[in-house]
Picture (cartoon, rainbow over the protein chains, first blue to last red):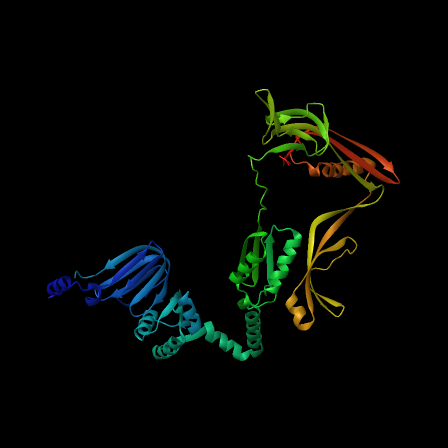
Length: 92
Length: 395
């Protein structure tokens, strides 16, 4: 079924992140990260922010981490980002 | 910038939330359509965040539902300011009044700064013309048509090569460049002769065209013909005068003298860099100091510059003037040697004022006392070219 979805999207050249709710990450150096298509925060400390998505979790580790802005779609994290881990994301 | 202004206009509230399961609170708030900003996790049970005014109401309801404590720390932006102003109406009125005054004042030109290399008399006339055209301190900014003023001044003043008016804020800058006067066009084909421009003793004559009438050792006075443009030519037993454009150099020893004097035993005043600016309000003989530090010494100060704002004068009979005081340092009477040195410099400056180009061969000075004053005369001997070209008449 997923194969069919992907092939249809590929042929139609439709944006996969919107239709499949795939998370999209924008990382600017080690200072800023924006996550689109998230489902909420699972854990929030200044050393670790665990973000839930439709297909798994994104774990951001670092120092002085802070959620600069957050709404239904986007999550903007600033601070000293050291590692970004994609955990449990299913292969789509 | 637009985002910041929108954020400021809409206002934001900084809130602290305390309780357990903070992540659940955040997720529920976001799902309710609230945008959260600058979230800081102070501790496991304490979170600080910013949101807008609508979000505050949603968060308050949510906190009550989840059994958490919500506290408003501060309100920023226009709504916060209005909330403060509601309690302190005099502050709000003052701020609005100040804003209105600034708004009105910014519609006028308050300073006209002129940079020019025009002679003083022409500059004065230009300033008068500017005032007639409406360009003066106190005029409305909207009434200053820089293009028209530039065109008018260019038309009226041939002495001006360039004029630029720039209106920046409350300051109008006028930049004027004087036109270089046209020199006499030298017609190299017209017959001319070289005459002496100064009194001197001829040392060397270099003739490239014409006939030299002087030789080294001759004493010449202004007007003496040095090189004539009339050249006799022998042509088959007949002598014919040929007229040429005389060219050459006549180097002569020229003497320059200058005299300076000063009273012996009197104190000397020398200007310092210590300046004080006063803004003074004057009306009917009374003057009030508006701004500027007090002058602690009266005798050694003098008003160097005074400038009135005409707009005030015209409308209310008041006069606001800007006065610049420069402090004069008073020195004790100089010794005779020091005074002689000072006068020697002044005499030398006076003597060489008219020297354009030349080689100083010798210098000397002498001093004498007459009627309680010390006189110093400086004498210079200079080697310079004294030839001046003038057209020949009657040829």
